[in-house]
Each structure stands twice: as structure tokens, then as C-alpha cells.
Length: 249
Image (cartoon, rainbow, N blue to C red; front, side, top):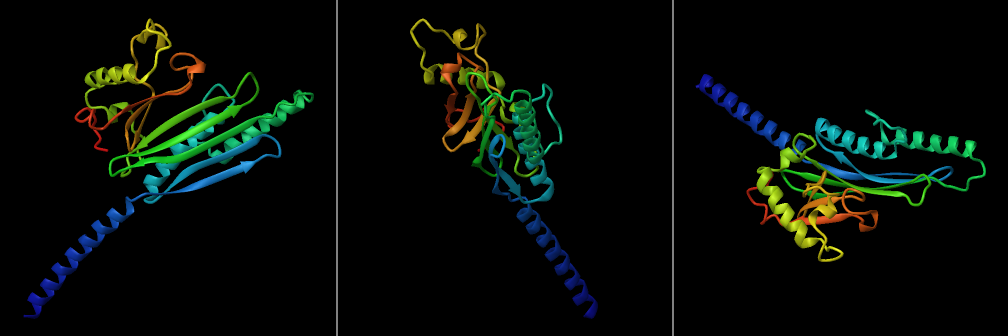
């Protein structure tokens, strides 16, 4: 009797341990985000707000490193990209570059400026989309604005590229081109798709982002048309792209 009871207790303990482990793992993969804020104006004007992932350490670190890498390289004044650099380090480097500029051009009234506004644009069990809006002004006719979408796998922290998102590239591109033509407004009836893409056929953008309204195709300034055109967004409702995506938003 004692042996049977011991075996039963062992089995119950074993199953409880498994259940607890599974429950703990499920709790761990949940992500939360808190806003990080950096601001200084004694030299260059720098205001940065961006989301920081909190959750499973390995997952959160992957996401945070990529977010910081993108922000840091938006501020990078060198011709080559910087790897493994934090936002705080990038802020210091940008500020020092401005100090050197002021030292060399003491009569200049130019004030360098960096503004970054990041937010969590969309969250689901299969994807987390981060939006990073940046504005950099180091002189010239106008500053440079850029909007970047970063799509992450919330379970692994991996950054998703287009091949991870799109299931049928040919059919997806056909659908996207049709939506582009319907949602953009040509200046006149003679304007063709090639006029948007500098003589080339329709091209998918480098940026795609998930929103509550659908998958957004984002073209930044100079990627299509002219600077005056500004940012161009084309929204593909999820019902329209059903079966064309590897992700179920």
C-alpha cells in the first residue's frame, strides 16, 4: 500500500512540475513595453522616445538591441553603419559631432537636431510591430524625416523580413500594385506607375507594418516620386491578403 501511494505521489508531483513549467514558460513569453526617454539640449537638441521590451530575457534583448541599432544608425554621421552601439552612445557621438562642427564653424547659427518617436503599433500572438519616426537636421534646406516599421516574432524576438511575412510573393505583388494604383492620386491622367518608380515597374517597399486596419506598405521620401510627395502609405486589409501571408495577424 505504501509503495503504491509513493508511486502515485511521484506521478502527481511529476505532472505538477510539468504543468508549472509549461505555465511559467507561457508567462515568460508574454511581452510588455515601457517607454524610454532621452532628452538634452545644452548642445545639439536631442529628444528620443522609444519602446523597450520587458519579458523573457533572451527575447526582450533581441528586440531591444534591434530597436536601439536602428535608432543609433539614424543618428550615425559616418558612411558605414555601426554595430552593437546603444542609443545613449549614439546620442553622445552625435552631440560630439555637433561640438566639433561648432568649433570649426563658430559663426554658424545652425543648431543640430534629432527627434525620434517610437511606439508599439500592433501586437498579436504572432507579430509585434514597432513604429520609429525620426527627424534629423544637421543643416541644409530641410531636415530628413523617416518612418521605419520593425516586425518581431514575440516568441523568439527575431526580426521578420518580407520572406517571413509574405507567403506568395507573385500574387501578393499583383494585389499590392492594384491597391497602390487605387489608393495613390496621380497629378494627372497621363501619370503612369513608372513615374512613381523612376522608370521601373511597381516595386514593393522596404517597409511593411501591421496595424489594426491591415498590412501597411510604406514608401518614405525619395523612395518613390518626389520629396514633395512625402510619405506614401498603402493599406491592404487583412481580408484581401488572406492566404498571402505566413502570419495570421
